[in-house]
Image 1 (spheres, rainbow, N blue to C red):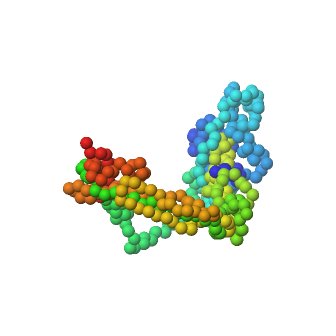
Image 2: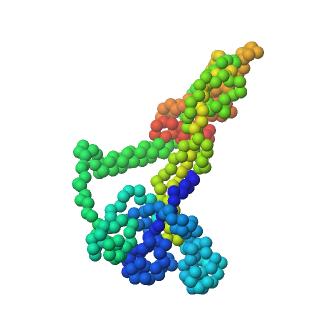
Image 3: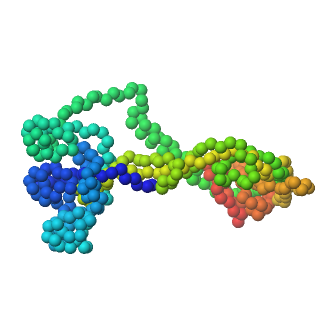
Length: 360
């Protein structure tokens, strides 16, 4: 699948000293001034908004931040010299990036209510617009009473479903055990039978369907309609884009990229057409009860040909336990079963022959 970018958002981080909530790009805690930890875990704030300011977009696309090898100061991913000490950043360690921090929230989040002055603030606010106090993660929010869920009557309980599944598995296990159990016995070939058939084909008019670009040359096209043909990872002219749920990927800079995994459905012309091809005119069949199978013979005209023949072989065994049948795969195997010869058979619980060999 192709990854489609929807834009960039600011992530958030929690100070490990005071538990203050801060915007992802902020290098120092808004509450206590502590530096953002080098191994900080970014997360999505309560309300996620796409960044639109040019400077923020540039920072979001710069890639993961780097830490100065001389003073450990944090710098943008596209910086060449440290903003704190001026040291070169060639070979500096990049921050970890690429982690999925969660599905992109599309709903409207509840506002944050300042515990100091009661001001209602946007869900993604980190400071109170009324008094400037820090809006910690546990700031009070409007309570929404949960309505009791209704339970449908008459449905199967989970216990009944589990019991039914266990019973089915047990029955399947018993059947598998029976089929896997074999009885060894000696039986005698009592009868053999064979049937061979071969079609006679002539050139005739046929109606068929296929993709437009696979229709034989010279065919008469009757009608066409657009139909789904396949899916591919890359966009194509006329393709239908099908995307999954948007999710946010940590860019290692305090920003996250919102992406979707998409594939592209290709539609093409599916057509009915008329063409000239070989069709079955007649079928010749012969059979016998000996070990000398042969093919039907016929005199063909110039506009006829033989099609692909079919053959079936059957051997019947008799023993004190009963009668059993076996179908050889080829003439070479079939002619080995002489009438009156003895064979050692392995027979399952349903009477099917699972293996056999000449009796010793």
